[in-house]
Length: 122
Image (cartoon, rainbow, N blue to C red):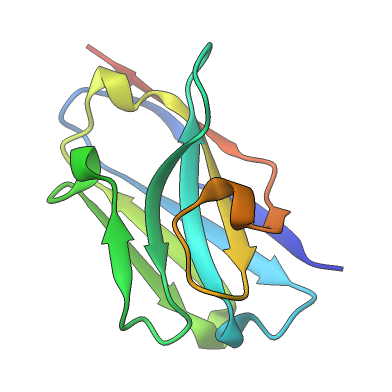
């Protein structure tokens, strides 16, 4: 059974930075694609970033490009999301997820963490 545990969320002011972490267990993590998604109140879950097992393929949602950076450490079974220049519209619950084949589609990810709240005040 795969377990994903996110951490690093919190309350920050606009312009600040946060680094989210996601620790995985229960699978050979290094062979899986990892993704970050977010869901704001009243909105659908949306793609944030994804990174292939090798780290060679990375995608970001347009609104995150240049501000967010996804990375992974296969030795630590972890994936990270560095978020800079945060805006109030970045406020959401952030989830990490895992899938075998590379994709940015939320509905194709099989395992999900419980989420971590990020709140950005203006």
